[in-house]
Image 1 (cartoon, rainbow, N blue to C red):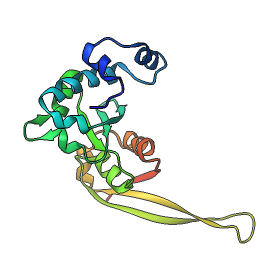
Image 2 (image 1 turned 90 degrees about the vertical axis):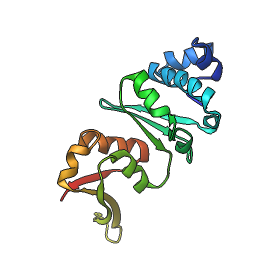
Image 3 (image 1 turned 45 degrees about the horizontal axis):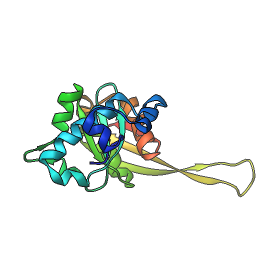
Image 4 (image 1 turned 120 degrees about the vertical axis):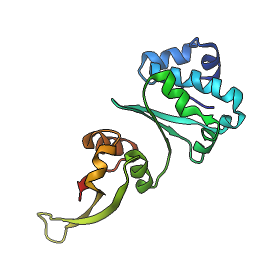
Amino acid sequence: MKTAICAFCAQTGMLCKDCQTKLAEGEITDTDIKIAKTAVDFEKNNPNASKVSILETIERPKFILLIVSPGSIRFLTGGTLDFDKRLERALNKPIKLMEKSKNKRRVIDDIFSPALISGINTIFVPIRSAKPGHSSVEEETIVVLSPDQKEKLPGTVKELIDLVKLVAGEDIRVEFR
């Protein structure tokens, strides 16, 4: 499994010069190192996990989001595969696995789960310009949830909005109706 540190460092628990530099410069965190060690142990019993790349780790107060290569979650979860559960035990924090995607609706759905989204609407807002004939249109995404789904959100609405911006580069608005 490709992780934030090299395979040698993940297997030995000692950081090489390059990985030590990444840690010192803040490119990786102690969490990334723990994830890599758990990944090496998991891969020993699950050889298909070698097809997986952990692309990004995002730590939040209530959970850790792992973004993995597209199509690879099936090698990590389901049946006897329990990579996310192993990580939760190692890190003492809930883990959310998410495949990298350019589909903003899928990204939003993954970030907001286990809450069920009623709808994701895109509206077009006209932007006026001081110069005649230079008006434009701005796209706005509205995520609609039922009020009873608020308690199922994995974080605060603000945290989730910020997370969507970080992962998808998309500004969203959340409404409960």
